[in-house]
Image 1 (spheres, rainbow, N blue to C red):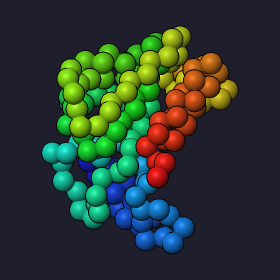
Image 2: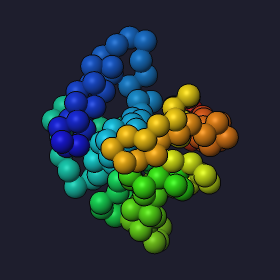
Image 3: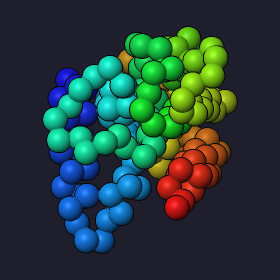
Image 4: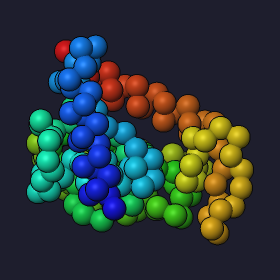
Length: 156
């Protein structure tokens, strides 16, 4: 499913690149949970997609489940997790972080006392056995990190 979604993302990127108001060299990708997993697939160099017109400028992945090493990517990546996330544990990505120098920066932020969906204002429920609760401090920190990451990689 993530490969099909990544293809959708590249198709969207191709559409956006044709718009006069879009700088086609500054298109990034961001996703949450399954969408975060899609970001990881879209940045993998060994996967091929139609209509890509090149890689995304950067990728941001909120609480994905990592299944492959993160050292062979075609763009900088920032991953964001809550430390209490049992649905997509941060450890899955920690275990896949590059151990040496990579072509592109890979950052992994893990916020204390934060669960899956920690950035969803007002959320406080248990869904499919998983605790989902808004954490304003973690959400604020995530916004700061996202803005900084995008400023770093989207500036010309």
